[in-house]
Image (cartoon, rainbow, N blue to C red):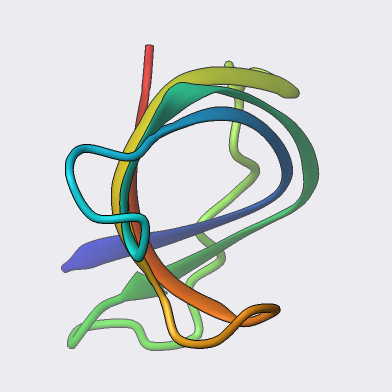
Length: 88
């Protein structure tokens, strides 16, 4: 038996960029604020597959986190980046 939680947030990041060395490569750091849109719970049970998992309680509707990442400018108006966000 297990429970699967799905929380959907919309996030607004505020990031600062630093260009160490070459202008095409950059580092990002900052924070973000998220707002909870939807929650879903699903229970996995081998004994009673139709059992209701109940409601999810004590979930914050506002999430604050730290963000870090790296990026690369592909052209003059296009860039590719990867970010990691951690809620606090």
